[in-house]
Every structure is written in C-alpha cells, then in structure tokens.
Image (cartoon, rainbow, N blue to C red):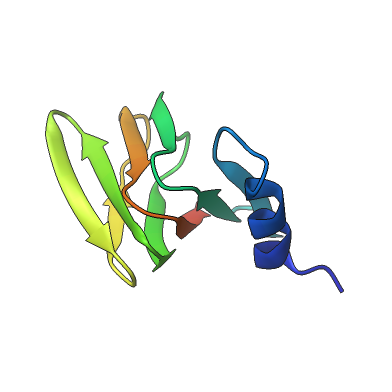
Length: 100
C-alpha cells in the first residue's frame, strides 16, 4: 500500500520546490496532492480543466488576476480552466487538487 502524503512529506525534506503526486485518476478526472515547505511557490501556470483546490494542512496564498486569496486549512477555491494563477505557501502546507 502506497502512502501518498507520507511520500510527499519525506521528499519535501530535501526539496527546493513543491512536490506533487497523483492521488487518484479516472477517465475524465484527476486528483493530485501537492506538498509545500514554507516559502515555496508554484509559479504562474494554467490548468487545462476546471480545478478545485482544498487546503489539507497549512496556509497558502492563491493568486489570480491581480487578486490574492489567503487560504487556511480546509478552505477551498475554484480555479477556472486556462486562467493563470499561482500558489505560495505561508507555512508548511498540503493541498488537494481535483481536476475535471
């Protein structure tokens, strides 16, 4: 049995950028878990599909269209497809992303 969150936390110890792992995939959806150390950032990028972000642990800043949204544990936000955005960790954080 593979433990996704434990693997991410282990790899984060020596990482200099966020760690992402697939949690569950289907024909028309994907669920990912991202791990961040405090100060790490996922630079501006776009998603091909509508996405929902849920903070499992920690606190992040979600940036989209000149607007910053501070998200704490269990906060969630919808990310539209093809809209540039970034995510930065204010503390060690885990986020769950569902796409599709």
